[in-house]
Image (cartoon, rainbow, N blue to C red; front, side, top):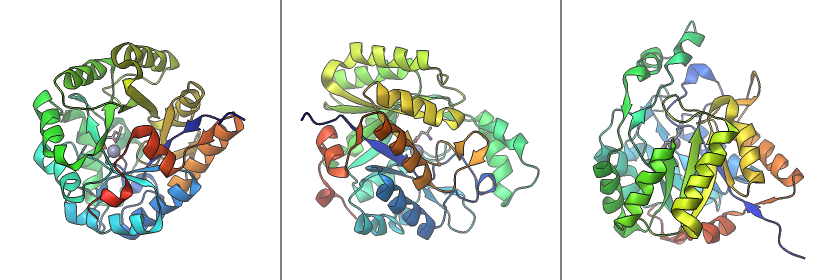
Length: 310
Ligand code: KMH
Ligand code: ZN
C-alpha cells in the first residue's frame, strides 16, 4: 500500500510576543521550557522552535547562556529537531540575534525574510494588571518597532552560519518576502530544498485569509518550483484553521504558544502539547500522518542530531 503523506508539525514553545500575564501556561523557566518542549515532541511535534526567556520574570532574552539551560535537556529527552530563533526581541542587533545559533549549531534556525512593522500592542488593552513590571510597556510599545531584517542582515545570518550547515526556517510574513528569498537564492545564499514558513495574521504582515494562503503558495510555486518545502503559521485565532487547511493542501504546520495562547475560541491552551495533540488528531483524521523527527530530517535534508553543538 502507498505510504500516506507525512505532515511535519513544528511547535514554537514560547516566543517573544506573549507575556506571563497572558497565560499561566506560557513557559519561561528553563524547567518549564524543557518540559513543555519534550511533551510537545511526545505529542507529535518533530521540530521544536525555541526562544529563551529570563527565568526570574519571563522577559525575552537572546543570551546564549539562557539557551544552554534547556537545550541539552531537550536533546537528551527527545529525538525532535531543534530550531533556534534568530528573531530576537525586536530591539537586538543582528549579531546578537545570530549568536545563539552560532554557539549551538542546531539543525535548524529561523531567518526572517524582510523588514516590517511587527506589532502586538492591541493586546496591552486586554489586561488591567500585570504579573511583571516590564510586560505592559513591552507590549504597548510594540507599535513603535520596526522588525529589521535588511538584505545585509539576512546575508549576515547566512554567512555567519554558513559553516554550520543549518537549515533555515525562512519566515515569510508577506508576498514580498518570497521575492526577497528568491533574490537571496539567486545570489547563492541558500541551497534547495529551502523550508518556507508562510506566516499569516501578524499585525504588519499579510492577513489570515485562506485566499492569502493560496496566493502565497501559488507565488512560491512560481518562484521556487520543486526547490522548496512549506509550512503554515496562523497567528492567534487563525492558528488551527489555517494549519488544517495547509495540511489538506499538502503543506506542513506550525503550532505552539509562541503563535497562539488558545486551544479553541476563548479557551486558553493548557500547554504546547495540547495544541500539538489537537492538530495531530485533525491531520490524522483527515487522512495524513505526522512525520517523525527522522522523516522530517529526510524531507528537509537536515544535517542530523549528531552534528549539533550542544
Ligand atoms: N513569532 C513568529 C510570528 C522568529 O523566531 O524568528 C515568527 C517567529 C520569528 O518565530
Ligand atoms: Zn520564533
